Structures are given as C-alpha cells and as structure tokens.
Image 1 (cartoon, helix red, strand yellow):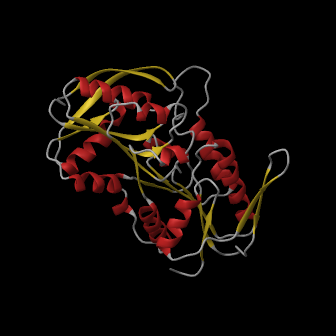
Image 2: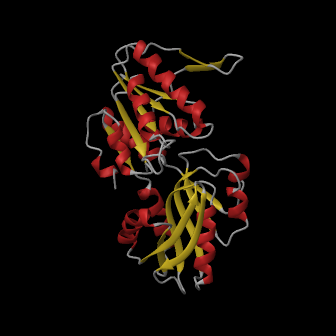
Length: 313
C-alpha cells in the first residue's frame, strides 16, 4: 500500500472499520466525534490529512440521521483539511428505499442523500448491495457498487445441499435470486405479495416448486421481517423441508427479532454491514458473515488504481 492512504472509521460500525483496517494492515486515523449539549455533532481530525487519499468507513444505519450527519461532517472536515481524494465507504446506504416517487408529493430521498454526500466533498462512493441499482446514477461522482453475494454463496456452498430452491421475496428480487441460483445450480421460486403500506406486506402465494426442498429466501435486507416470516410460513405450508434466509443488511427494526425467533425459519444469515444489538447477536437463528475482506480488497484496488470489476460479482 502507498503510504498516502488513510482510513477513518465512523461511529456507526466500529468493528467493521477495525476488521477492514486489519485486512489492509493500516491503522485507523485518530478522529474525535463529540456532541454539544443540544445534540450537535462536532468532528475534529487529529492528524494531518493534506494531500492524502482518505477512506471514510460509515454505514448510515440506525440512528440513520445521526450517522449520516456524522459522515457529512467528516467529509467536510477532510475537504477543508486539503485531502486529495475523499472516498465514502458506505456498507449500508440509508434512505435507499426512497428511490422514486411511489406516491404524489413525496421526496426522492435517496437522490437527496446522494446530493448531500457529493456536495459535502466526497470524490468517490464505495457501496454494497444498494436497494436499487439505479441509485448509482444519483451521484455525480464515481460509484463502485459491490455485492455480498460471494460471501453468502460461500456459506451456502459449504452446506453442500442438493435439494436447495432459492426464493425471491418479491418480483424485484428475481435477478438477485437468479444470480445465486446460477452459481449453485439450483431452481428458483418467487413470492407473490401485496404491499399495503411501508413495512407492511402480505405474502399471497409462491410461484415455483418448494415441496420436499430446503428453501433459501434471498434478499438485500431484513427490516421488520414481516415479509420474510410470512413468506417462510407459506413456503412451509406448501411442503418445504426447511426454510432459511440470506440477506446482506440486518436492519432488524421494530419487532423483527421477535418475529424471526417465533417463525419457522431455521436460520437467517446476514453480513456485518450493520452492527447487531446484543439481543440479535445472541440469537441462535441469526448468523453473521463478515464483508470486511471484500471491502478491504476493494479499497486496496481503488487506491492502487487496479480493476475492481471482478469484485462486483
């Protein structure tokens, strides 16, 4: 690694930032993030950043607004400290689900957040499993979009099951599920659902054959787990031997953990793009795979101006 690289870990996911720094053999730079009594965030860089290539590792997960604001302030501080290149490494991109006008008089929040990050002074964004691929086009700076599929595929291969069927939780996830199916040589099925309101969905039917098979639901995130647990129950009712789930982002908000614990799901495999709370980490059904080597390798290649295209799949 050239010695002009510096890593900064935000407060959203310090363990992931530490793992990435260990993969690269590069210590995290000293950064102080404090708060005024009214909640305002104060960022202070403790090292010289002039002329450096900086990678800021910060997921915009809960508390979403605090972590987003912290990211923006770090980027602005780096810009004013004359950093040469500011790379925003965002393992989980909040507001990504608001990527279009789904109803009259609503914002396109994913575009607004992209504008904020760009205006703050970011030179490049490195993200993972964006909720919608077109979000890359919301930025006026380069975006490297990674997928956690290699990590999750490795987990599924190690199970060495020949009776797998991969299930998409909705029509929008079919392409993602087909990718997994192609690499595992397994058939796919699709959940036909109706979404009645944000975070409220009802699984209606399964398109495809799941009887006598181990079904694995493939998704980009688990939020309230309503769709996931309903789909799992429908799949079991249709004669599946077992239902598992694989998802990149463990949002796990509201009643998610309780729903998973009380569901027919045998396991939910997620990555560490979002840190788990103590209860979720202690759950016997939730397993965490690390994407630190994937992100670390992407950072290494970007810094050395090598191709990262082989990491996109």
